[in-house]
View (cartoon, rainbow, N blue to C red):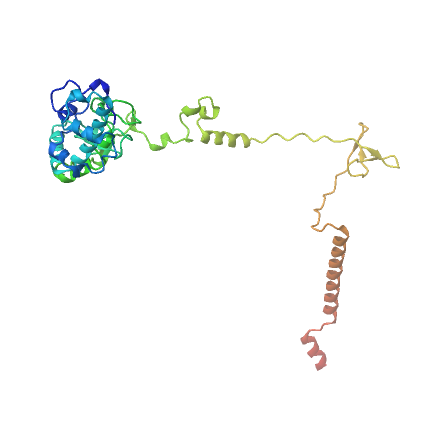
Length: 344
């Protein structure tokens, strides 16, 4: 937390703590009791956080006059030290009582959510270390954290990442709002009902969640307006167009007949593809090719001789089986005929 030179401490006649809390943007701060600051036990560990710890403490307790503290660096360090002391003081019993009066008067502001209907908020810090986060406001009704209005967050302190004129969140800490609501549990409001959330509608109809999903068609993506696929409705429409394009079958090309390439020895024409004689068509002088025999599928074996031998062997086996069956049928005599011959 740094000090803004526009709000110089020189020339004021009131106590330093009152002057500090009365600055514009410091409405969230409460006045820490002098007895609390004078107790060394409450300041344990803060000496390493600021430079010129003793001089800063004397300036806060008005042990040195304003004219003796014209050094802007000393005033900045005093503001930082008071913020750290303030974060410890507001979680004590006296500090909670002081913050209770401010909460009842809505000095911390109200929740910006419309459904909360002006619910008072509490200051909170997202980090306990100096110079990391600005102060935020916590709403106990919607259980959400928001940025405070600029008028309430502008002060003589600033965080290192937030620019000048912003109150550091370390001056309130991460514990205060929750401990405050646990102490004054009668101030805890009822949570928002589930049906109180805002429902987006178009011409009176609720908008479904799938309307904002990518690749479902609808409006093109804003990230790539020059892409034709996005203007045509996304990836889903592109897939449908691709399937419609591939489903169209191209017309078959007409088959052209080739003229006879070779002629036989007897003067007849032969088909150039099969080598068989073709019949000449009367009046044209061209030979029409003979019908081509159906080509049998090739066997799985790569050696033609093996296939032929297996086929012939199978043929011989089947022929011998038929012959043996016929011989057996001739030689065999039924039992009834045998008995009749024996009786005779």
